[in-house]
Length: 225
Image (cartoon, rainbow, N blue to C red; front, side):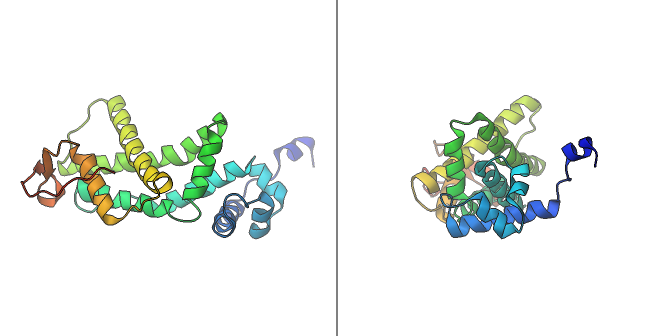
């Protein structure tokens, strides 16, 4: 084998990557973040520890990618017929994912580490945040086609709005579960969605099909998260 071939190394195997990420999720469920080690993950996946270190430089990077895979598999914006119904379903989905034993606690631990590690923070942003922001774009475009939202002519403004919406939803749900220790149940999701769509004044509410309209005197109280 030539020196250049040795430096290049063997190509990554998608099958091995998947086995490692699955093993990481299983270890997080069984052991938790604190007790998880790369050695345990390697044994569960049936690979050498050197295989892990060729792909991930640290436990934090590995866990970020494992959590990102869970989000990619389970978080979506299905068409429920209205912006309100779509948003409420997405809030419920996010809450359910963060309550899984391999996601919420591990994500909080990684975020804590990322406070002092810019490279890790960038990995969290690219692997999880940026990939899931697409759900906001998909949901808003679907609502626009239904006539529930106006067209945004300025792409930069549209991107800023998508960022803001994602931050509000993800930040509120994460705080509700991980800081306040309260559930994201259907009633809370409904109240939070109304607050998100119709604001703090309560001047507007849901019309037919969940589209914005004028609230009736008997409209439900919109609880703050």
